[in-house]
Image (cartoon, rainbow, N blue to C red):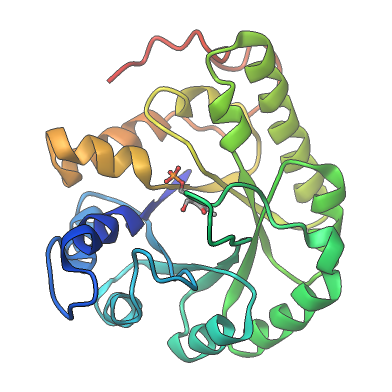
Length: 264
Ligand code: PXP
């Protein structure tokens, strides 16, 4: 079964818009995480950014204590955050690139350019019994570099697929890139997650990508929750993912990008 990890950063974004710098405030990302779990989510993802623009330190400690599924800590591979992660002991960390001026994580981690640094952190996380995922673009060189680091997972950046989803030609090209990267990762012994820009409309087409373990989804779920509530938003996404059979690349295996009639 394809798992759903809910990224709750944007619950904290709403809180920080009103209560920045204060020790309390609403909405509470932990309460949101518990609702997601109750609705069937398989894991909770939070990104502790260096600039602390949404999730705060107290959130990750409360999540660690209160959630019953898996905690995926998204993070930059920098010493201060690595130290927190080693103390926090999430189930898995996902290393992402971070730029302070970006709106969201805009590209994959360039693992190829920093194999030694990623290897060094992977070693420390493995010693702490923490699994490691590397957020990378669907690029075969990045997949090969990821396999050399000791990470067990990659998370394929689906941003370009989401961006081009309404263009049948470019959408198909991006889907094929994701499928090829997933195939290569599987052949190299890596497990494959995917995320970024996924929504109720484009997820059915993504189900053609093979070997997927988990999708990490944030913005579209939190957006949908504003109208239908978080539990319903999670259940609707789980329903959209339910047909996953492990993927089978090929033109007849799923809806073509841009033609999926599933609208919400
Ligand atoms: N996966 C990673 C590594 C991310 O950085 C993000 C965005 O924080 C997501 C998944 C979720 O992306 P979105 O909010 O577009 O669903």
